[in-house]
Image (tube, rainbow, N blue to C red; front, side, top):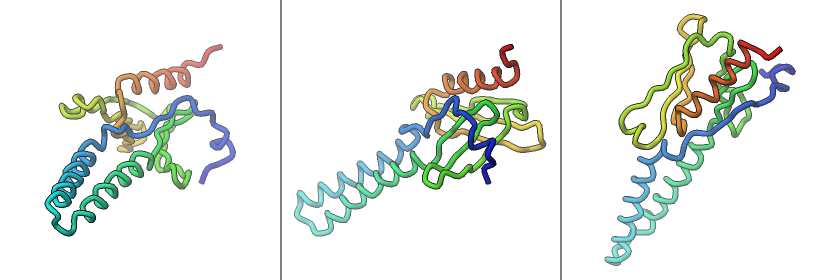
Length: 153
């Protein structure tokens, strides 16, 4: 449940999952649409279901992209469900012991990555997955953390 103080937190930075995170889904949708087109060209029945499947996959990609929003406020970093407005996971900035970027070869090629936050409170870990330009995003969050830890006087 969101308290009144949390509801009034000003958002300093926010983003959604990158479009590139779902590149594999676009490729499957493309192959599905191509198969539907080939079946249509050959006048074989059932082509329309392949095209409907391709459109459905694109709708799924759209919904998945906007499913969560990554947010940084002056007090916390959050993962929020966009459709319900609820907080999925949150971590106070002063409890972040380490923030790192994970990025494999394919993710590097696509320009995406995962930002991992480790908590000072045990084994708690929070991840911003599929973030576009993870280095710039990491710098935004580090700036927010510095402002919280070293406020201007």
